[in-house]
Length: 365
Image (cartoon, rainbow, N blue to C red; front, side):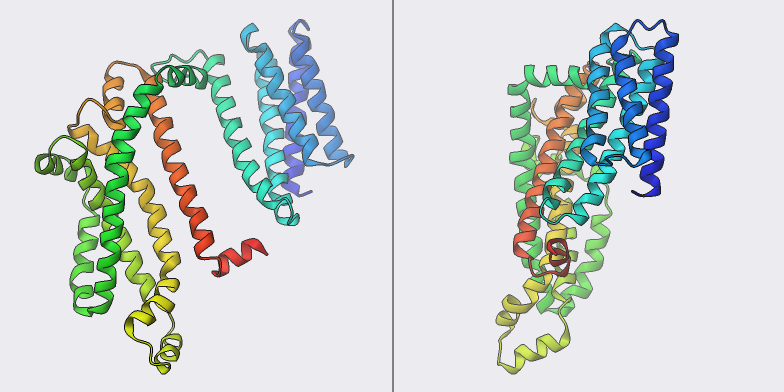
């Protein structure tokens, strides 16, 4: 047990003790808060004293606090409620810390723990968001609660699906494929012709610095108001990161490795396929992952400058004007899920393709 974990346990026990005292001072009417606080105090004392220090007990303490908070949410939020929220947060943080340490010491369950820790952390953030939004009575036009967003999400699935198709499947995905694909082939040509490298890469660095809010209106004028203009914006945004990373990756192989293949009379394309492209694979996947988020951002921002009455960007700009912030957040959830899933799939593909890379070997050791 590290010193930081001991500090978290003591702070959690202290917050639970304050919740317990506040519950009794409030008349002792809310027995759920008092009981939950008492359990968290015992969990903190157990951890500090070294009795049964285990991640499951820390996680159970945090979950008990969360369950009690959900039970008493509608009955009032006194001082005991907020102290119990702090105590539950600290014990959940402690469970995450111990989980990360366990993932490095237990090879069998390392992948499970590494996946469970961010999932649990995300759930806890949503939980705290719900508690604060309801407990502080925040107006929906400022910050809707996750429950309100979920209700709007389930009631608007057809609209969200149409927006997802317009923005992601058409504009972002097609622009992503065209931008990354054309940049990849141009990088191979540049690598073959050094003159192009000296001439095009400075231009590429200049164009990549252009703001999307300046490019989007121009593309709308050139390609119209439908998804084609948004795909053109995505092409511009994804082209040069892919180009620069691929060129750098093609130059990453060692001179001794290239000379060895040349001694076997390897042609340029044999050298490219057997050595230089495999060496460039980490650079290429790095660009693909970066562009997976840039493509979606570019498509959404481009929709603010003229689009048919469908799309994530169109819906966000429209619903903000109508003060429907729950719908805005539902659209943000769709965009976040699409971007996260795309990034995750590319990361999995990268691990399969670049299994030989030292970083992947170190993760599996």
